[in-house]
Image (cartoon, rainbow over all chains, first blue to last red; front, side):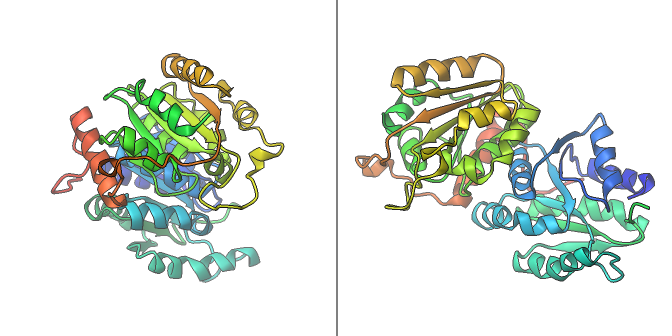
Amino acid sequence: MEPRYASLVIEGLKGARVRFVVGLPDTLLAGLYAAADDDPDIKYVSVTNEGEGASIAAGAWIAGGRSVLVMENSGLRAACEALARLGLVNGIPVTMLMGYRGDLGEPYHWGVNHGITMEPLLKALRVPYWIVDRDEQIIPAVTRAVIHGVSSLYHTAVIFRTPLVNERK
Amino acid sequence: MKRYELLKELAGMVTKDDLVVTSIGGVKPEWYSLMPGNGTMFADLLGCASPFALGVALTLPHRRVLALDTDGGVLFNLGALCTVGKEAPPNLTIIVFDNEQYESVVGAPSTHTGGKTDIQRLAEGAGIGCAATARSIEGFVQNTATMLSDQQVGLLVAKIEPGVFKEIPPERYKESDGIEDKYRFMRHIEQLEKITIRPRYVRE
């Protein structure tokens, strides 16, 4: 993700009073992790897997620190058990920001499966999501996803697709 | 030593200003029977207690946060130890009740801690500066007191006998579900911190 788009994501997060970002870096959103880590107003926590990340984000949220989990969409699979328990058992929201690996035109054979499973998993978990591909959608999508998480007490997701994300050349 | 004996000691050390996160398993009904107040989040996810408590501790750095984890929980999510070690919030203490088995699954093989795995050494390797193992009630009390007051992240492994305390009075049974537990803990934090976490109308 180019710095200009990452800046818009950060602006959207701040607009929703998010100051706590949990992440496991991937290529498509690479610029966003760096932007969050460099921002003095944001606490960025790097995790070792996305399920752990969901638990940390949920702990921050319930303590009053609105949070998001940033990851590749393959991380959704890794986080499913944590998300199911935190969401369906406790009603503690985790707002996820993901890059759309496996989108139509995916250049890597290993990335295709991410696209096959992402939306069915989001639907199985009943997670409202917004797939965005225009820069003017970034701020409203991020802000609304966070707000919807607080009002619904359930997970939400924003997925960024080309041209907002791109491969490292 | 038995977990319930240790929890009774711990209940005398935890104040109304502290926040506690428990693992699933026998620790949950036992701790509730001793501390039924709203200062505890009773997690419903294996491997969640320590990372969830880490999120709480990082968000509220002025408040003592205690995770009551288990060997099964820590082993399920080992990477979380590394994140705890990396972030190292001085207000977080993790107690791992290690009975070397999946207690709810009677007759199953032991957890890895019944073999060569040593959670204290794992914690040290993960960067958790203050790590110890207690094999007596006195050692548990002494180490816990130190870790709750030393202003550094700590992890204490308490080697315990298997078994859940069977004589909890009916009025001390935990009957609430995960939704009620969430609301109680969240409203408790709102009162403690004088903040609103979930407003009636959510503004930007």
